[in-house]
Amino acid sequence: MKLSTQILVAFTLVILLSIADSYTNYMLSKKVQLNSQFLARSEEIIRNSNKTHKAIIEMQSAFRGFLLTDDYTFLDSYFIGLKRVPSLIKEQQLRIGNKNDQRATLDSISTLHTNWVQYSEELIKSRKEMPDSYKTLFNTSLKRHVGKKINDAIAEKFSRFDKIEYKKRKHHTEMLLTSLKYAHTFSFIFLSLTVIVGLLSTIFIMYVTNKRITSMVRLAENISKGNFTIVKDTRNDELTALATSLNRMSGKLDKNIHELKNRNAELNKFAYAVSHDLKAPIRGIHNVVSWIEEDMENELSPELKRYLRIIPQKTRRMEALINGLLDYARLNIKAASENIDANVLVHEIADSIVPRNFKLEIGNLPNLFTERIKLEQVFANLISNAVKYTPQENGLIQISCQTFGGVYEFSVKDNGIGIAIEYHDKIFEIFQTLREQNEQESTGVGLAIVKKIIDDHQETIIVKSKLGQGAEFIFTWRNN
Image (cartoon, rainbow, N blue to C red; front, side, top):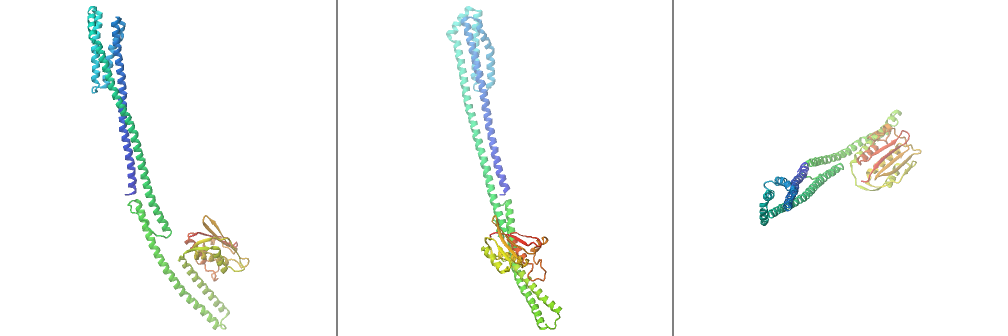
């Protein structure tokens, strides 16, 4: 699976969980809204029921007061109720609707109230217009408990109506609380799942990606160090192409390095063969010149003798150049690292190179674990260079070392003739020398060897010098 596909899947899962969370919350919020609306409507129904029942009771009380006292002022509340109660019942009918199971109870209350109004109106009318028949009607109704039965029935209906409404109210209250509880629970669950899936997906993708990128970085570092390994990557995604390219590059470099080593080996063999073949004619020329000087010493003119003396100088210089070239070619040979006491190494080199009339100052040099032959060549060529370009009188060579964060910085300083600034870079090129070309001891190879060794070890070397003020070569060196 491609890396982009994995990221897309992770984001899709997070989005789907968010959608599920939103949908669940939406459905639960609708239930909460419906239950809340029902409770609000139920509260209005109960309030209206209480108002209606209270109005009917006030009518009944006013009616009884009128009958007991014959005071028409009691009928004020009665007549108010005649107008108010029907409107309250009609309002209640609109609230509960036609399909509500309480509609029958409300209709029964309306019918009973109508019956009671008819009963009360007959008594009121009889008392006003026919006092004689009123007593008979009143006694008959009283004995039959007509009004009481109607009032009790109305009270029982209101009680039943309210009981049913409270029961529904309780049910919807429980549903509301349950919906709120479910809303909180599902929100927490989906939020937790979203966070968990997001974190796990991110951690997984980061772990896999970092692991693979780290392996590729390690491969690149190995390639830079000359260790041409490969990285195994079986996934088929964007990073696989990078891994394949690195493996292909590593393989090609490994092949090229092997070919280069083989060619270097062949070149070294060729150099040795050519040097041997070149040295033989040089020795022959030197011998011929010696024979001429011996056999024809009396016949040679002074000018011819001077010319003959120049030939050995040139042949010796040619032989020195060939030897220097061979030394430069041998730098490709890598030796095993070993523990080296730099103090002992430098003293041994100085004893064989520095003249006795020179003043030599060697500081406290460190112990190193490195290739002995390479470090020895660096010091030998720098010390030899200092001796060549320092006058014999009052000659001074100073060798010291400083440490900067695990890196050793060596210095080889002399008080010789110095080097002009424009030649500071040129002196490290092969066969470049500041001495005359007919001087045997300067071939222009020594500093080139030093520069190549320093570059191969990925170190640095600089020269600080002015003409007539000596020279100081500073180079860095690390433990292998």
